Image 1 (cartoon, helix red, strand yellow):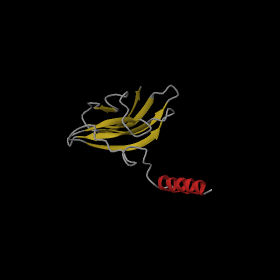
Image 2 (spheres, helix red, strand yellow; image 1 turned 90 degrees about the vertical axis):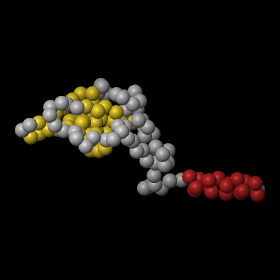
Image 3 (cartoon, helix red, strand yellow; image 1 turned 180 degrees about the vertical axis):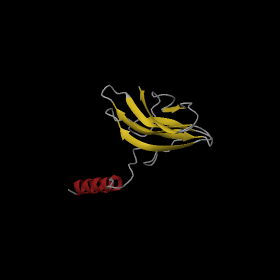
Image 4 (cartoon, rainbow, N blue to C red; image 1 turned 30 degrees about the vertical axis):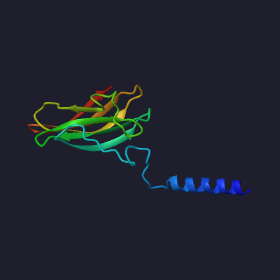
Length: 136
């Protein structure tokens, strides 16, 4: 009987040490519950939109900024927060539309065939224009 109680007590203690409550960081995601990426040296990255795909991968869209120019950025991650190396270059697609100004991706939608429609804006000489592009 004593062995049973001791085993039960140890099991409860281990469960309480590893149990997570709503609002706690998920320690199985990234490092300590957080993923920070810096795919391009000497640039900053800002993401405006994030969502999960039907295959549980994570997509974020925004821009990279080298201080002179913003290029649209699409990043794809695995469910555990690691960059998806099968997408673009090590998980990051950086596109310069070369229309004379800055570009930012602001949203995306997953199509039934798995492709992504990405939308945002591009700066042109007379202001800003919207764009939509399709990505595998």
